[in-house]
Image (cartoon, rainbow, N blue to C red):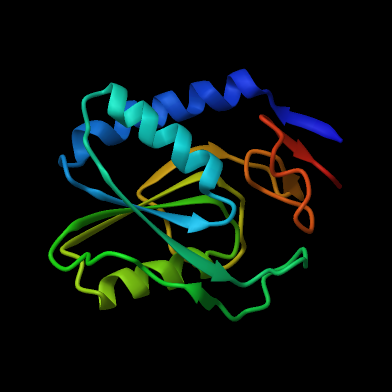
Length: 169
């Protein structure tokens, strides 16, 4: 495993993101975590935003497009939808990594269809991609085009628990 970001570097990037996001969102913004990968990032970022005085609501979407594969299947399935109404609300969608953009695009479509008033997106890591795709409003780290694990990103369900980010290729 090649360590790309240490735990301390991850923490610093999350704090920097919170500094950028806090002035852009209102109290009461609904944070939507894309399960399962964004759980670690969401926990850290929402606590950082709370330290900056933001009071947030929480929800999650469980989308599936990878399974245990290393590439997106091209189809995003909803395994569990939103649990609260987002009608008219400001929503901040959080994901761990953006590569093809299909999961984030699917999440935005779901939240839009549910009537959200304003939708913002944030990813911890953005990998380079050759085709046009959805672009997040906030990005924590411009990642290399490598197979990443740790900090919520996995290899067939393993290594999500690592506090930093590693490359497995």
